Image 1: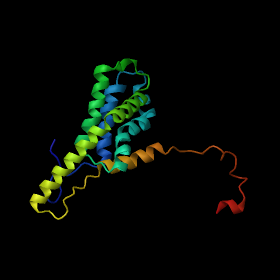
Image 2: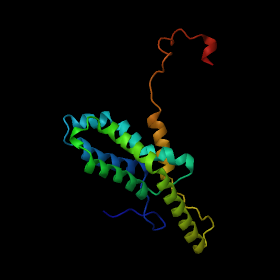
Image 3: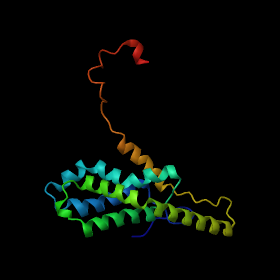
Image 4: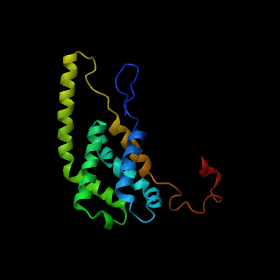
Length: 177
């Protein structure tokens, strides 16, 4: 598949939605294909899968860490590969929950390794950009920032909150503003 190019002739970067959908398709093929009602369960657990995909970004953003999409995707593929090799995929009752837990545990144990990798990558990039004479030596890769924003949306929850049930008609005029 030929990669699209932008006006400057450089390869066009994928949009976050495309990247996430690519990962979701891989997860669906890996964990939901052989399950009874696999299609239905995939859509039922899609929000858990999105939380699993975006969890590292949620942890990285406050620390000022940024990884290119290829590195981020590689980290997730490593976790998925470990599950396939060491886990009993057929015995997993809720692949979404299982994957979210696996990603959270992997991050808890290995976040410092990723932090060191990001520091090394950033230093090397800034050094090369300085050699080229670029004014702004920081490369703007918004992958982590975009995925962290998606995590906030997915994790926000919805619907009515406790304590609000039945108050719709009984709210006083003064409480509305």
